[in-house]
Image (cartoon, rainbow, N blue to C red; front, top):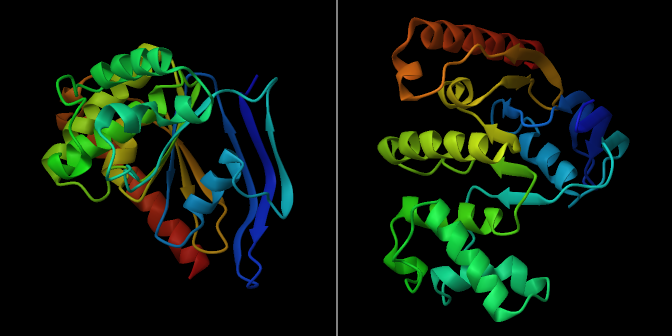
Length: 246
């Protein structure tokens, strides 16, 4: 059974703009699902609907069983500039009313998970862009999520940092058996990370194609003929989706 079912979902803003129309999609347990599409196609809107920050104006979004624990990573790290890494990562537990000792123990574990050991006392201005994003990912992990929702988290990073974080994210999600919805406009990133890719059309956004990725574990996948072929196929699928909505 699917962990999440999105059926006939549409969303119209109060301004009258229709961002999404007739979106059908599923998320399977332990699956890494990328939402690939051009800017303005409703990718982030769809993610906000799944988060529960907005409600669809048409269709339904259903979780199997009780709503799972969800971790969220936005494009901007959204760290509190006056707080150190420890307090930024522990913030969700503080808001949940957890005691200081409990939240700091969980934060230390999450900080170690993303490789920021030794930077617990650093404030955001003392960190590189990649380190700030690691802190944001640690904050998403601190509540032991079952589902991770990520909105173009690496888009503003340099390519070397982005490739390294892609590797680390894939390994972390596999280790913890997380289900992930990852919004991106990068064909290459989506093919490298994903089990499936949902290719979105332009506005109003809908799922124009679903691509199942035959991927290999490890960074060597990027240099393989299978990776190059699937990137070309995903690029062609995206081009067709954009033509349909032009």
